[in-house]
Image (cartoon, rainbow, N blue to C red):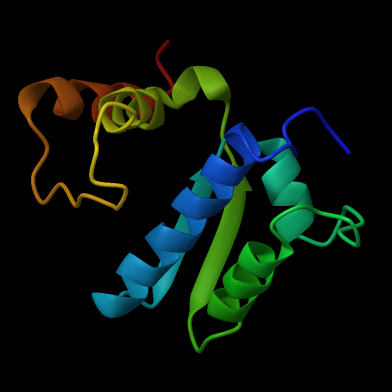
Length: 123
C-alpha cells in the first residue's frame, strides 16, 4: 500500500471522513461532496485498492456502511495546496485534549479567508 496506511495520517483521514459523514447525516444533509487530499483514502473508498490487510478495517466498514445509506455522497480528490482549511483545522485540533470532534458553527475571519482561497484554489 502506501506510507500513509500505518495508523498515523491515514487513520486520521479515515476518522475525519467517518465523523464528517456522521455529522452530515445527523443534520439531515442528503447530498454531499466530500473532498480529501488523501488519494490513498479515496482509492480505498472507491474500491481501487485491495483492502484485505488494511489496518483499521472496522473503520473502513463503518464508512462504507455510512456511504450505503439513502443519500448521495460524491467523493473527490482535492489538491493538497488547495486544502488550506483542512490544514488549519488539523493544526488547531492537534492541540485539543478532548479526543472527540468539535463543530464550528460559524467560521472566524481567518477561516473565512481560507475557505475563499480553497474555493478559488488560490495557494
